[in-house]
Image (tube, rainbow, N blue to C red; front, side, top):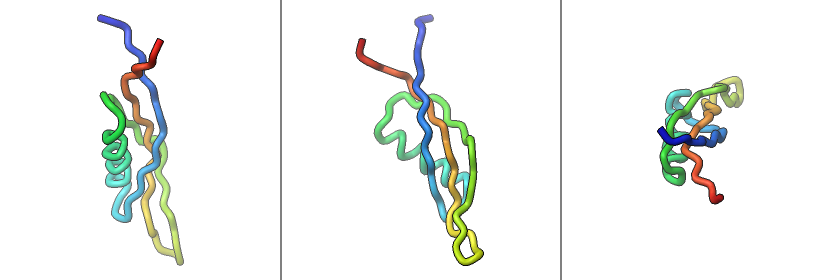
Amino acid sequence: MAESVYKVITLVGTSTESWEKAATAAVARASQSLRDLRVAEVVEQDMVIKDGKVEAFRAKVQVSFKFEGTG
């Protein structure tokens, strides 16, 4: 098997409905510009609160993809 290198980036997805939808939004957006996504890991979750009510869910997601650098 050939050796491979993967790059990991951190994204923050948001949703007004849930953390799951926030994480899914981050992966969906990343898949529009990155090829060969491999793994996504939710590393942090938080909420935006306004006037004592939850306004949005945020999920910090680390996404890995195969690195295809030059040289």
